[in-house]
Length: 213
Image (cartoon, rainbow, N blue to C red; front, top):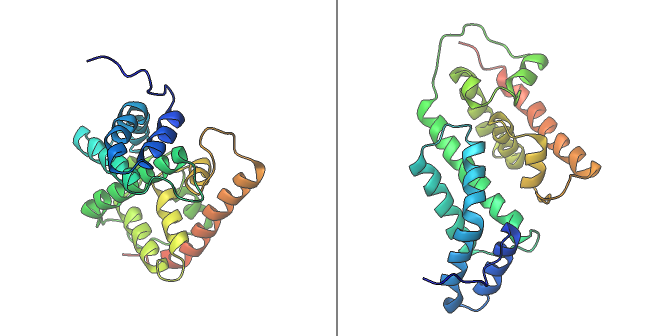
């Protein structure tokens, strides 16, 4: 099969051209899908593997990738996001869903008596250098419970709490909330991301009082 020289050679170019194809209606959908798979699939897969910290198998990674591309095909052009940033946002959402499902299957670890988390311990709990595998099961259970308690009144903070607990950096949080992944964060974006994570952790602290055996 002859190669299609019209395919862009950059991630952002492929995403933008896929949006243009989708504007043609049903007839452009197949080409848009090929553009996304060929032009964006490799980088998205690398992102999925990196942010699952080696905990995801090939089947689940492929599933997340396909779900990401299909979701983009269904809603390719949100008003406040570039096509490239939107692809990463969808991938993050899919990955968070996968992490939450995985952790829900594993939660319930016991064995720590009289645990009361103070400010320092709460900070250590979200040390992103630890990675997923270092967080004890009982701590992750506390995080899940705190997020559930926060969900009704502060759904965004509950979501950010889970993101930070899963190892997301302030930069990644900023990108999720609209920062361009290909540009250096501005001081304002960095401050906003740090503020989001701080407020999520601060609100969660009241719920860790119940994390005692």
